[in-house]
Structures are given as C-alpha cells and as structure tokens.
Image (tube, rainbow, N blue to C red; front, side):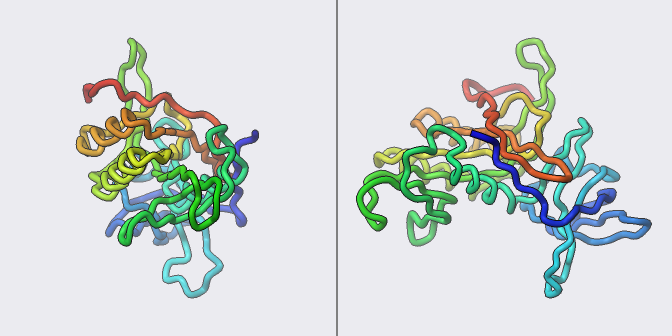
Length: 257
C-alpha cells in the first residue's frame, strides 16, 4: 500500500507570514506588497505562526471570493513545513480510506462521510459492513483532527519534538471523544485519527497544559478501546502526503511541561 498524495492543482505562491488576526485573516508579504489571505484554521496555530516565517499560499479561481488567497503552510523554526489548512485532513483521509491505507480500514463495504449519530451530532466518517446500507451489521466510526502544535521535551534522556493536540481548549473535541466512547460501549468500533501536518516530530500526546479535560477524555477513550491513530502528513510546497507512519501515543501518565 502506498501513501496517499494530494498534489496542488496550481502552483503555490511563496511569501513571508507577518501576522494573523480576527482568527481567519493573515497578512503576508508577497513581492514587495502585503496581501491578506484566508486562514482555514480555528486553532491557535501555536508554534507555527511566528512573524516573518516563510509561508506558502494558494490562489482561488473563484472570482466570487472576497479573499482569493488561502494560507496553506508555514515553515516552523525546525525547518519543517507545517500545514495549517484544516480542510485538507478530511480530504486526504478520505483518499486513504478509499485505498485502504491501513489494515484496519479493510473489509468494509461502504464509506460514509459526515455520518449523523444524533440529531445534533456528526462524525467525520463511518465505515459500514454487512446487511443493507440502511441497517449495516457493523460500523467503524472515525473522527479526524488536525495537529500542528509541537513542543520540545526530554524523553528517556533524549530531547525530542512531540506533537500535541489540541492547541486551544476544544469543547467540540471533548464532545467527539465522548461520542466515540459511547459508540464503543454500544458494540461498534471507533477511531480518532490525528493528522499531524508536520514531519519533524517523534511522538504524540495530548496537550494537557492547554486542555486537561481533553487529555483525560483521550486517555479514557484509549482505555475503552477507541483506536488512536496519530499519522504523519508530510507537507511540501508541491504536495501533501499521508504517510503510513503512525507515531507512538504517549498515554501512560501526565508529563511535565
């Protein structure tokens, strides 16, 4: 099985990230001018939004858009490109599901996106197997989260860079974990896929210093049998690639920050 690759349909433009403001706007220095780009990311983008960092952005052909540009990636201090567009993970995970990138994604009859589990709640994907489309015998539920945060810490005497989630308090993320725990208790299988849009990290853990409730829920989900899949997404100005590299999830205890 090969990694899944998403190539940009048009070349990205390179600039220098200046600042982010009002959550969804970024000023970028480009060819001697300052342009404003859309930021498709609701998180804090902590550790990947330093002023004057090199960045890449895309240009939309949609003339109706107020902002034709979208910030796609920023270069971190480590030199790694970090993908900050949170619309990409679901697209590339869908491709991975279609190609059955991991063994536990095999053996299902249908992939359903934005699967409704209650009148007010949906999960990103449901893999169904058996019986009819309306009443499958078995469902594997998947929620996808985008990871950009990374910190340095000493692990077993070695200084490592560790990916963490979330980068801001996430009540919505907490709810998704509760949903996955409940579905697992009802006899289904469940998984949370953390798409780590940077390849300079060696481990994954919850960001307890930012959202301790999320961290405890994630550990409880793992204890209840929810699969935790922190997968590396290799980011470059030419393509974004979902690799088959799944990081170790460090769940056994709380760590010093």
